[in-house]
Amino acid sequence: MSFTIQLGRHSYHFADLKTLLAKASPARSGDYLAGIAAASHEERVAAQWVLADLPLRHFLNELVIPYESDEITRLIVDGHDLAAFAPVAHLTVGGFRDWLLSDAADTAALTALAPGLMPEMVAAVSKLMRVQDLIVVAKKCEVITHFRNTIGLRGHFSTRLQPNHPSDNAAGIAASLIDGLLYASGDAVIGINPASDNTQTVGRLLGLLDEFIQRFEIPTQSCVLTHVSTTLALINQGAPVDLVFQSIAGSEAANSSFGINVATLNEAHDAAQSLGRGTVGNNVMYFETGQGSALSANAHHGVDQQTIETRAYGLARQFSPLLVNTVVGFIGPEYLYNGKQIIRAGLEDHFCGKLLGLPMGCDICYTNHAEADQDDLDTLLTQFALAGGSFIMGVPGGDDIMLNYQSTSFHDALAIRRLLSLPPAPEFLQWLQKTEIMDAKGNLLSGQCLPPVFAKALNFTEAGHGQ
Image (tube, rainbow, N blue to C red; front, side, top):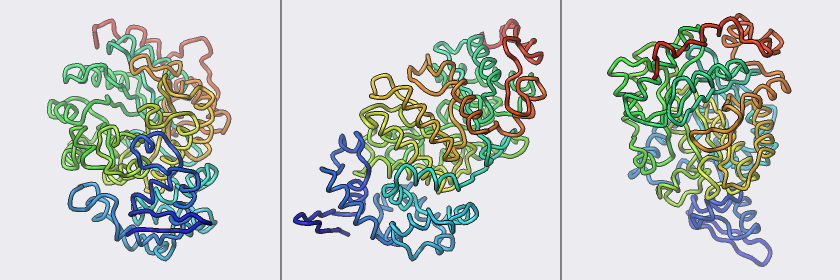
């Protein structure tokens, strides 16, 4: 279906729904690179005007990627809950925005609505929202998940402890682990990006993390962020796998470029659940996404990068993941050029994921060739926490020496927790108090001294573990 609007002396024509969504999207470099962005601010406003008057029901009848050629589309359409959709089925996209900002859209209503929303509906309404709107609505959503602790509770804020090392050295990883734990990081997950993806290396790292968590009785979960096929092989070998990680995207073709499909994810999900390693729950999947991933694989089908990113969340929610992380500035300035675009994208991703019922975190980050700096990270970090974000990264010094990018540090997480009175996950907080790392008010107790719990960590690798 095509759309036309007359504004003053100018007539604007949009060939189909995906064109309308692309032209209505806030400016970002990836859409310009793809040749689908609005040619002017006036055209963007015209597209947003048309989009605001578009009935939500239209998204049930016009698909941005055909049903017959894309398994993500089939997953979204076949899984759509018409009964859950009913309370907003009469609304336009603009009317849906107004409803989301009203008192009627409380936490209970938004939770019940989530299965009735298609990703494209959520992407569409986000294009009509200011930053403040994105924060206000996302704050009302609460998505709670469980493994060895409870993630996403209102009034709590979690972190992934990211102890990467350029040579996967056990002593270097252990040092970063202890450093992060002393700053109360690691309740979302202790997750390593391995320098090498071979099965032997990943298995060694899984063993190291499992031994560390068990030795110090830490109520958290571990993950080595390797390809799902490697994790599946290690599960079959009896490796101590807590969470299955995989990068995902919003089209079948993009996921094929990652070497995955829905069937593979189903197999991994079932295998991890069968291990029964969770203590308070069994949400076993950890997904990462990023605006621009489908375009970088030439698999975007002419869909704007924010809409196709939101389709990845439609895939993720089929697996009830423990964690979903938008790695917002990692892919580079070709897709999100500067701090302004990175900040907007991070808040859009969080808003869209939370509306779809996902536990959204954000790697608040940038690569060193982007037009962004620490001030931009601080701004997004504060806004993300205010919006009720589930978790962020904890990287030693905020500088990942293996992946060569800038993210949030242990100190950043501690600062935002203190500023907004947001403690870690409750089980993890109890452990911090028991081990004399933190008191009940969130104050660190260790100072310059190593807490007693870590006295035995000094010889963690002396027996050759991980060497």
